[in-house]
Image 1 (cartoon, helix red, strand yellow):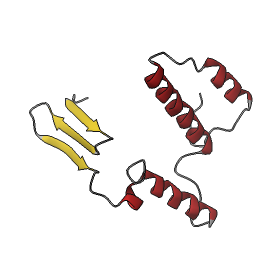
Image 2 (image 1 turned 90 degrees about the vertical axis):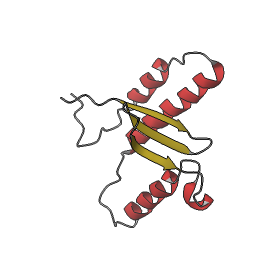
Image 3 (image 1 turned 60 degrees about the horizontal axis):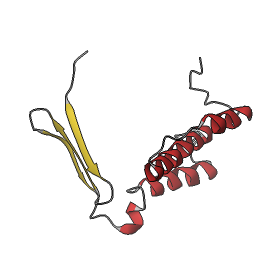
Image 4 (image 1 turned 180 degrees about the horizontal axis):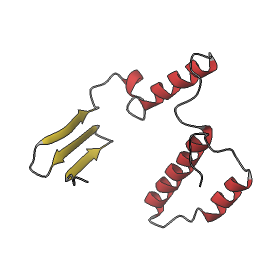
Length: 115
């Protein structure tokens, strides 16, 4: 396996993401600060893309959503815990939340190996 050395720097308040190789050459350089506000949203356009996917799914133009509802809920719990940890400066114990979440026996995606 080839080892790739990259450095990523980003500031999602100011709206940029830059990834460079170890030798200084640019791998990716994104400026999100100049987009139309309606297209950018709070997640640099991702909100609008997610809504488009949901609408297409509800209109039966798509057979499935790119991310399952369970995956989205898990990501949301993780994101909220990260925000809580950032504000409090403390580690957030999600054990009781995951235990309750798991108690609902929500189905995993069919293409996931739950092993």
